[in-house]
Length: 334
Image (cartoon, rainbow, N blue to C red; front, side):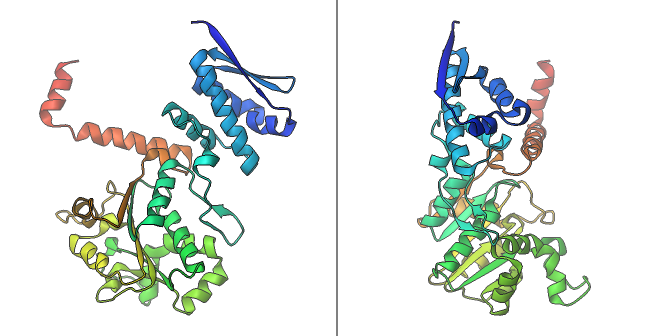
């Protein structure tokens, strides 16, 4: 097939430097993934490859240039995700799709969705009173929920933030751990503290806790309460029982919003116990006012290896979940 060329005018030396990356690592990645060659000549980027590849690479580079102008830096994760969008026929730029800052951290860093899945998740949070965020580790489901809670609190949409998770490793029976009650539950709630410290700052967080405006507590403490004018987050919900999930959902009062996050592939309940999260997703899938967002490995924003690890586990579990007859057929076919 005949080669085709596409060009982009770009006379900003600093912009070219960021796009190409250290030792041309960015452009090498793009060339490999898009099957093109890219050169910088006299203020132009010249892209050579098969017609469709060259056209897609031009769109990709224009999107990345737009992204760099906005955030000044470019990571391999940005490039890989932009490529995945184009390969899935979503050819708009990341800034256009994800141009929403949820809140700023205490250090002034903007917290915003970084993938289309995260954008759908935030849209669900904005438009529903109960939202489920389901996905593997690293997809930002808890962190973005925390950011949305802080935003709602600062905007005076709610009067307090309540964060909870089941202390399933101790079976909600924390008596064997040393120290007072706070010492006993802290290890299970530490990830929630860490996110709040980053978003609010340590001093601001402590001040709000002392005033009772932020509460971090094990799920067992929700029983018998009515949570009015609150933004409530239930984390690690895959480790709730059916009874606990029903109890939690029926706590919601007037002017409140609840976000339930979990990973149905990481259930730590004792053998024989059914996950309340798996059950409730079937029960409430068609209920108006409830939003459900499924995030996947493409929404992972941690180290790139995390995405590969989860993909490998999915492949392994899928293979081991085959029926005996399927496995036998597979062997016989070899």
